[in-house]
Image (cartoon, rainbow, N blue to C red; front, side, top):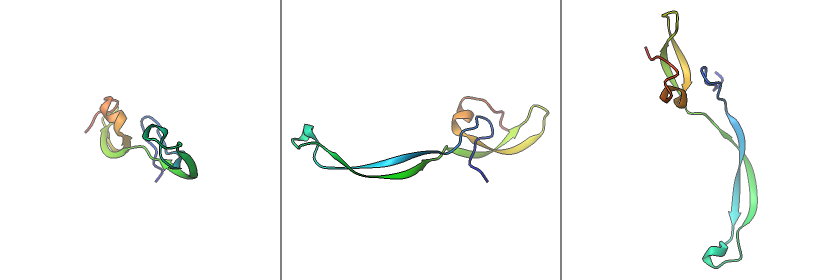
Length: 76
């Protein structure tokens, strides 16, 4: 099952983890340096909820928490 919000269309996005080494200038060092970057995935916060559709039917959907908080769905 794809991790995509069925209301807003939010989906996983790609990014990277940046590893830094060294003491910061603020702490008296010569500054931090990037030593390594690795790929990672930012996943949306999806919840499986029962949603009442406009025609009165109840369906279970994957919905992002942002959509639930915004009131974009009617919980059944």
